[in-house]
Length: 194
Image 1 (spheres, rainbow, N blue to C red):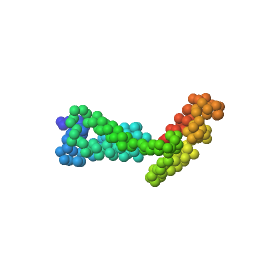
Image 2 (image 1 turned 90 degrees about the vertical axis):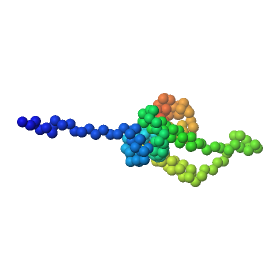
Image 3 (image 1 turned 135 degrees about the vertical axis):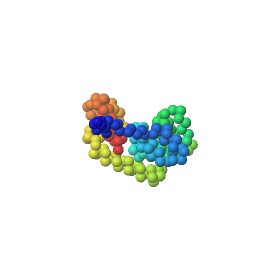
Image 4 (image 1 turned 30 degrees about the horizontal axis):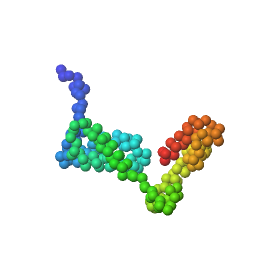
């Protein structure tokens, strides 16, 4: 007599996915297709890693693309001494660091010898910077009107726009310094998210 329902006794075949190192070897050997699998495996983790370190979503997306470009370009240098994931995140850290090195703050020229040191120095922004500043201010203004309570907006104005101290503001609005700090912290978080 045959075993009842022999198909139930068989296990489904477990097809194992290739390791990162196997995929790297295939890409280095000239087959670019396995890189898509590496990209799919690492994109979410790399994006979260970058996004936690960079405050701007557009910059995060740009840096992640740069990471994967650098990754593809330098796969031949992966020696396998450490896990591939460690190598990927090391490369990601280097890419972020090089991005910050390139974004150097604008310098302000020194005043002439006959000009007093405390005299304001006139600087002109280029049209692109003017446009970006106008856009950013518009988004912040919209966010302030939409997301901040009247009290948060008032405290934000006093501290950040009128340059008043926390102690002075606390006295003006009859709140503790900790309450003022808490309101300002929440207001900044809401505005920085924009």
